[in-house]
Length: 171
Image (cartoon, rainbow, N blue to C red; front, top):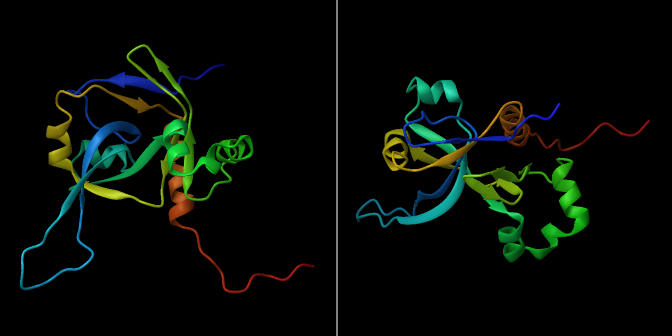
């Protein structure tokens, strides 16, 4: 049985985990904070996927939504051409590229995209109320179960990893 990966949603739908949001404004804090002066912040725009739990978003149990940037293979080719070699594409597919997660192509009529690579190494927080207002008139796509849970589990594995100073020696 084939399970669809995505569904199309409009601005009136409640924000959920696994939503792909294009051109989301992200506040980048300064690297140096001067307690005497004003802060200069930078705004960058990223395509992001929502990582916060749907139940927390729906019930307004959080103020800040956790998001991670994503790129298509074509976009990431500009960043690091080695990532799109056949060998590395298969490593993404097999979840062997730590800090990243691969989502399938989207072939919905309303939205077509190449494979998407989610970057867990650089996550951001966006104010929930701001995001709701920002998305009122925005059509977007949402990753469906069980692929949404797979994305969440992949992020959890990345987030909870522990590097041990000394492992158990080979038998």
